[in-house]
Image (tube, rainbow, N blue to C red; front, side, top):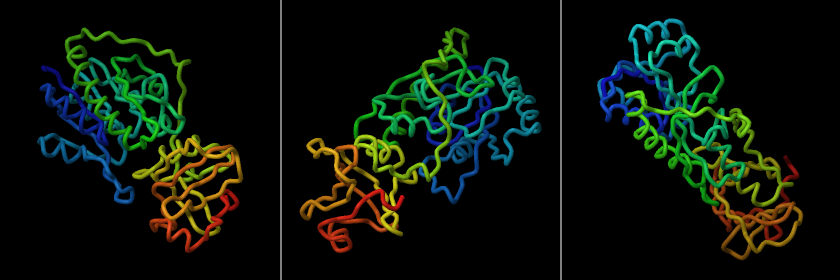
Length: 311
């Protein structure tokens, strides 16, 4: 395709969408990405590595919003600017440098879950589907006209990482089928009805603290939403930090009872939830060490331990 695009990208979505542009023959004179944070434990592919493998000019600026970078992009006279999971909003000066538009790939079915961590929020709130949306970038976050989008299912026991992988594939498909229309000018963009969705902020590790006054399904959704590679859902047992990494809702659980973690036989750990229902604990760690049924019984005995008392 005879066009030039400057690309701001990060994460698996950035890698796959940059790959789509290159597969379609789009000239990419500059890739802007983030330096990988060694303290973050990145689990996703590297845009910088892909760019260097493809002999593309790539930069990892400390300040991607600087006038100097905007001037450099303007000098390249790109037809398009694309943002694929880049972690910063692009300023107005950049939005005005692309002759044929600036587009972003967002990890939800806009207008739902505008803003940060859309996959995690969708899982946390018990959604049954989410997706990827390619949209026009405007000054307001994730509010521009929609080019195309694709839904993916969220299964009841899917972790956020499972859903993120589906969203990555959806993003690749959406860009692959929408790009020809953007380039030849035939794409039809649809305005968003922002009243049909909401804006969500960033999540912090502390947001994974479990509220044991909630029901089993709500707690299960929190566990799924923040399970590794995210920081994990946690509760305090005295001075010890317990992380629940994988759970399953027990459909035959008793009615509401005091929240308690207990062993059933020698095979499974169960958490009773105050508002009703119970969770089978499939994977957990205590102070960073795997928590097995035998180790739990050795520490807490058959009566188990109350939950929520040390929050």
